[in-house]
Length: 218
Image (cartoon, rainbow, N blue to C red; front, side, top):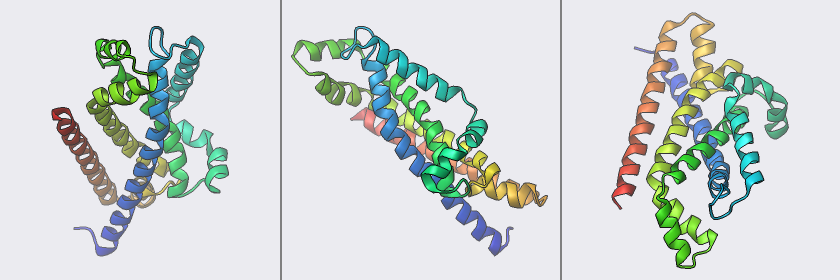
């Protein structure tokens, strides 16, 4: 059994991980949601068709998704320092986590909205609905279960990314595993952090699935 000190350290690291993931997911969804909506609605034949806007947004998102997170962590250290004043700690880790999550969230939104039956959109257009009304009253409500599952997937990925942020002193369970597990040859610490990460992922996935099912029934 872990000692009281170790339990306190694991508890603190878990709260830091939840904080990092929570803040990053919220910011990423706030930016990724409108980005994904624009990517869908600016496609050819859609309500806000714009060829160049669609291509530029798709290119930016593809570039963001193609950069491995461990490289992104190091590459944007100057930007992280500019935003939060430091490149070490929980607050600093939120910056690369958010940057990595935004393009992923945008693609999730795009994928969910594309699953909406085009006939529903055409029916709304025939009744004189504006593009804004179609987005708010047709696309988003119809795609809501898929969006919730997508946001859950984003959060699950960020749990893994947050652990990776520990390699540069990002705080949380990853940082604890590196400093007290790997560097001090404490296999038990590594095991405890892995178990907690698995539990967090399972809990997030179950919660997301439950909410999506409830929304789908309504």
